[in-house]
Length: 440
Image 1 (tube, rainbow, N blue to C red):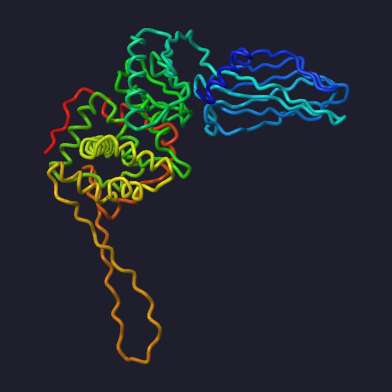
Image 2 (image 1 turned 60 degrees about the vertical axis):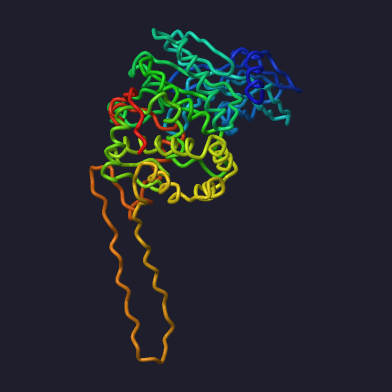
């Protein structure tokens, strides 16, 4: 089953990173090694080693599974024939984040003054949220963990169904363990989330979020659609993230919305209002997440409607093909042209037509004047009059062609690693019981 089965075998062999047996090479002997968990702040790799000559250098090599980049640390210690070595790895410092349940593959390399070297066998440590007594249930490669009330078995059924259904839709195979951690309250979950500023911690109430490629955190009262949405981000990452970047936000979020049983009343009503007034965001402006809080609900509603249109109008096979083309490293316009014969503007106009709207009126670009070499003619060259850039009307969810490429990529970078979290204050309470938008 791939890399995760190797990690699982290592996990069993080394008992979750607890003390491993002694290792010896030439004059070097490892007498003890383990990993201490100080959730949510750090883990500490510990090593006791001795040698006939002074121990001079110790390095710990580690990798966060399933898709982490190999890294290493060189801890400081007092050289001598015996050494006690600790390496502290920050678990949530704004640069590195370890999700609950993260598996860390590691080994030590030791070198002494005689030139002898020893590399220990690989071991696996599982980083746990040690504050609670967790119960677990699993089916296949998906597991749900909880410590309080709630219908955890129903979450497991939703998780299994979502991974199977969306993997089939996108033509993807999730071949690693996927973990869902269900917290009883927002306060309980805050310590497990990626650390942000104090103000952000006070303001946000996250109902669910994908915090790593294989891990979703959610509240016990979040509901099945929260889980469907966030687990779909696990599948979209596998299906479409290629060597040169991720998916356009409208496709990633729209697919996650499409996986839900309903998009939610707040999203559909906002979308209907924008359709009635012809004040929809342009598709190209939705390549990255909007930085305007007033447009977040419309962004999600449009993304859901656009993806629904693509699947229903052109079929599931082409939709899976689109993801495969992105996986190969294509740009958005090239991928759409290859699969549908449309660029983003063409797709937008077809989608707008399905909603009963005319094609978007787009500004014609003014040609850039070219410098003319000096000529002996006395005729003056007229100076072109610049075309003014239209300004969007604030507060109504609109955006004009003049500013559609100005959505900040910093926002995309901040949210892209974990996918969008469902945040109640931003998304109108996270209500997910609604009728489907009427097709016009």
